[in-house]
Amino acid sequence: MKKSEAIKIANSLYGIDCDQTNSHFSKVNATKPVWWIEVSLKKIQQLKVPFLYFLLQKNPTVRVLKIPILFLSDSINNFRIRNDKHVMCFEINISTYQDVIGPNKIDLKRFLLAEQNFHPAPTLVLNSDKTTS
Image (cartoon, rainbow, N blue to C red; front, side):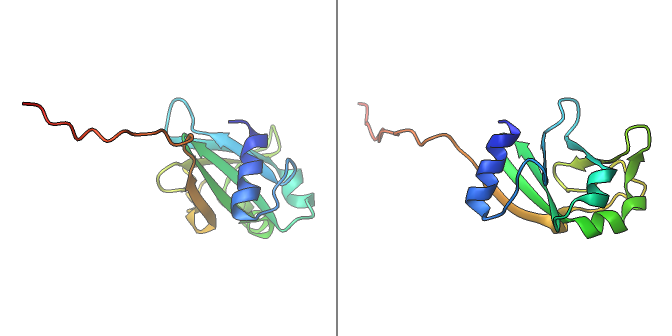
């Protein structure tokens, strides 16, 4: 899944208004069970929207965190900041939604907007009530 697909799914299923500017997308890290996201400090300080949406994919599931910009700007010291890249870093545990790299290990589960499983189109299952003698 690409970010553009995740945005379409989130907007249509949950009635939110996320786009390329106010959302960040992550798949589960290949080496450990976390979602990794970096958000520009400039975006947090200058974005004129009330929320950032974290679109978190774990096949076949998409989870959405709706995080207030004010919370991020007020909590900047609670998260890992990479000054070389001017970003706030999130490494979110896929089970607990806890940021595992920030100095205060903030629980982000309170911002969980929706959890929905996406499955491929259903397949026809034939009744196999056959008796053998």
